[in-house]
Image (cartoon, rainbow, N blue to C red; front, side, top):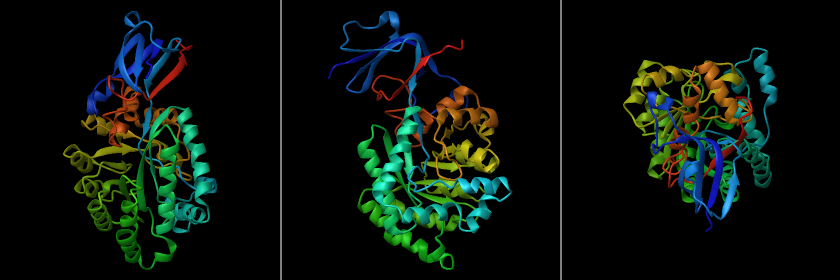
Length: 387
């Protein structure tokens, strides 16, 4: 295959061979000014200062002074859905809480009702538009969850859509089964029956068809208890589905600890955690993932990301792109929110949505930074006209 040279790069940003960055290491990144990158077989083969660039390379891309950096890695999204829930935003402005809206049939149950009435083809078409939109703003790898089906067939339908997106998109996509997103209305008086359905029907079928990499549970106040979460994650593990978890968004629920107990790849949200949770994470291999867009749109506390990094943790940042509580997959906006509301530096947010986001999807060996052998999943910006 013919090599490609990217020349006249104003600045190459994100150069390192690490697979995850913790604490103060999140503040530093390798940089080359006025550089080049050579790509062979879709992988970075070399890079360096422009005066050392090879000659006679087959394909040439002139960056014209623009910045080149690794593409964004968004490790927590819900982009397969039937319709937005913008009406709930108005309800929240009038004083309704997320929990109150959910208790009255809104939120996740609202999305589930609409998705159950929507065909697989229509779900694929709408999700493809969203995926293409976020790719246009620099996202190159993404995790997508089910969880708006809440029946066996509709959860499988969502996961088949995710598989089809994976087959038809250049983006790297990871799939997560989230049947334990909420208790459906039909099971409100018998939640154990729904949990049995997840364990005995949904998980075996998801695993049997190879539709998911991970199993997630919404472990929080008003959703799934730590005991229920433990049962579900242990059942998923028997079928080869690794754990992820929604934890501590609405209350200090014990979700972080139950995620760590089940060797979760990541625990996500973390708006309501303290020293106990931070210390538990420091003693684990579980990646804390914070979702500042969700805090912004719901007007709830932001996760204490500054304290987490200062304690020595590495964090990932993700958009939580979904139809109700975080209706945006725009990573540059996410980074601005993290800087302004979490007091993170631009360098820390950059690593949160590149190498650490990749680690939260177990792909940091091939994505998330610029280094020989890594996939050339890159962003080339326009030339900086501000400086």
